Image (tube, rainbow, N blue to C red; front, top):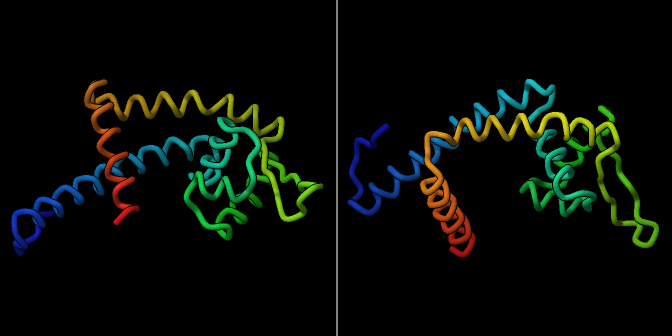
Length: 151
């Protein structure tokens, strides 16, 4: 939707660009979530399994940082994927405050079973852009994300 009020060329361009980014993310995210639901998982549950599947055992705080979520949100997600038998918490004997999370054998089997399918879906969604466009978009999004944290 175009704003009916004009704020000046620079602001109008920034708003228009933000809106396109927002809509593209929502469309992409919706399709990705539809795919993830076919695995019987929520997006946060899938994110935990995916992170642990690629990175291995992590401290809960590290997992929160990787997934950009709060500890409270992570506790709920971890409780749920633990109940499903996909992850386990490991308490550090040296530092009782440290709690690690890792995939169980059942979780590793699930990760190996579903991630390739998920990756193929992402490839399908991205196929509208050629390789050079994907690389450029990736570089631009990285630049944007890093610069926002400095403002």
